Image 1 (tube, helix red, strand yellow):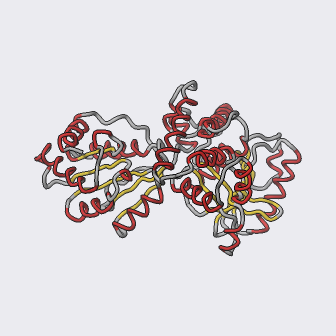
Image 2 (image 1 turned 45 degrees about the vertical axis):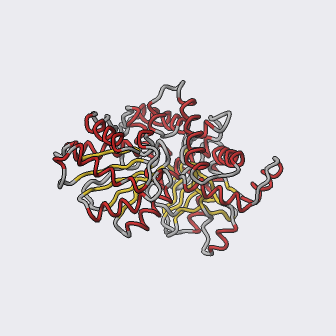
Image 3 (image 1 turned 90 degrees about the horizontal axis):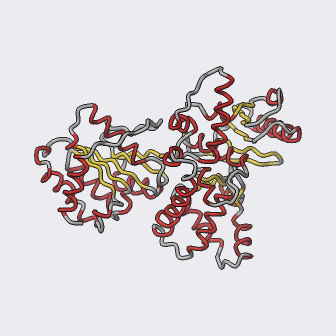
Length: 424
């Protein structure tokens, strides 16, 4: 990176109007002295959360010259080494010398592309009056690097694709309480949300463009966020593993069985490699693996994990018929809605199955697509009774999309999924 290129980038950013931003539930705090990190899958909206924070700063009277945004995937900044990061502050002062000695706000996007960035950020916070904000597409790496280098002087917020409530806001769909027509519309929109997912660009795109954009996303996430970042040697296996995960969301994942399946397809791979590759997908926030709720960690480790993917819309890039498995997609959306609020969730099975439960026995949730079928109704009633007996102090909820008249009243805790997903 040359200083001339950096000065050009700085000057161009300050001269350019900030892009319009749709409000999100998550807000980036700008009034803290801690380094603020945003960790989330690529294209989930981290950059526009930054822009929203910048707009609030400008509205509060902060001059644009004291606000700087750098995207470390900008080709004008390549190649960038950690020892060159000192150029950022030096060039900023040279372009806008009047800001010397004034508090500055520095937003660094995709910071994991610069090895050693965290030590520079720590020194910057120790020696300069600069508020620093960073994003990364590898959640665990970002959290680990911030925690190790800054030792309690950072906070990390997770960024997910749009929730159902945010999806409705982006689509301009109003929520009208106690209105039958609006409730029918919201049920329709939930079915559409399961298919297209919550990536902001996808939600706003024309229907014809969505498959093409999702295909691009899948390739970008596979190669940039997994294969390149973790130096994956068996790229075809990783691609097939990612495809398997997105085709089987909401299902139990048994690594021993998966190992046998891959071996039958001609892949030469060890179970340890599969565990390693699944860990890479988790680190990249592409998948979540829920353990079975057990008191013994050893028992947890020996039981299958329940698999959920980061976005149901992205499944269209990996399966021929994206309209299939709506029940599993709904279960994944319900999991993500709860995962936004807290991290530690489990599943439980012992005859009957509970899709989602917490560690403290405070809640459990089951999900099904339809209660119209009598057999399904009886199965879900048994599962809810099982959960209530297992955790008598927990709030149990059964979520459904379709139902037969009056059937939902036969199950304590039954609730329409669209209504549950609109919780603030």
